[in-house]
Length: 154
Length: 432
Image (tube, rainbow over all chains, first blue to last red; front, side, top):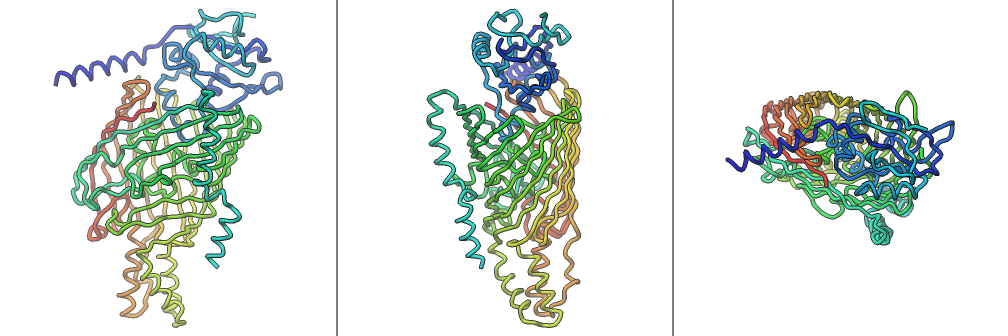
């Protein structure tokens, strides 16, 4: 009986930890060569939920290849601040798309360095990283977190 | 004539007899991508345990399942447990290659039935998506992911709506066009091909049959926004195989129908059509919607089926489900129902005393035995205890009305009785 109670307690702690809101700021980034200058949270959400594969700005449609992160605090913060989805909801949503054969999921990169390297070398790539880790190799299109969606300073 | 057609069919459309041609080709294309690290392996699964209060009735989740011991099945792991593995490759940004295999307890497990997806997808522009190979069936809101338990809140899709669908994959092609509009994304899709599945008769006690379809065509339109997903579809196909068990009955009716007996022959021909699966034309019309604002989940779907033979289940069906997110928990409530068209009435036919007993009565009995007249009330809860696994528990109370065996395996004597069954199911659904 005791192991079962211990297991249930651990699982309960896990589930409570999963729903803690996060205040971390996350930057949506593209290559400096990418023609996009700004995006909305709604456009980014549509891209990361497989609903669209391009963003239109000034009448020009730009094909975008989104890159995701492996499960972790940054991914939690990104989706929670982007569209209010918990990570288990995102995973369930993508399980539907992926295993029905509708859309393949974006590639998952292991850390911020891999994300910065990938996005800086691919003109069509879009990614996200912890705002404290952004460098000059990428262009920030949107800052998420702190209770609002903030366009980057020019 | 039929043989000529089949031969012609294979010559002209070798690709729609695809799995043995497509799969090796597919593997050859995929192999080089392994080295370049763009091949990925993922999967999904369910470990489920189900128990009910009837020792004389075996519940089924879909028509391809065979209860372990026919009509009577006790608590079981076999109803909902399954494991799927998917291999994906993207050799080019405009090309996807996908193979998916699914292991679960079904009537005839072989490689052909285990491969649920095997397709190449091409995206010539950002708006178009064209797929060729073995595909998911597009005629319902959830038909193409009904085995992915992690993707929905319940332990299984509502049985009255998804349990009777005899199409599990489509061998063919589809094309989808996506565009923005009405503050959301529209998707228009056309799908064509054929399908096959082995199904048991009478819980496997009567053997089984290979159900094949031909000329399958589906059109669908869907729209989704941040919280909404709405889909409408129309699908039609022709049954390309029959139930061997019915051959003697069909032969007898055909003999009477061709005897040019006034009135009697016409009635025999009509009965023959109702007990002949091969050649039956079947259509599905569906409309479904999901609303999920990260607090409330509401999903409802309704459908209408028609068929030119009464041995094919047909009628109106629907379900509605309401769930509420509480962090990692989601309690839900679901009602689902299947209302059949009127049962075939033996008094409408009179073939004479001898033929009534030898042909009419068994024909009417067989045509009505596949009727589904049942509804289910379900209450349950989903608990996402990790970001990639969920525990669910669900209580169902089902009632079905005679005649017909509904979506369960029962002995012939029970087909003339109403049935009430309660079942409790617990599952762990996961992805990897």
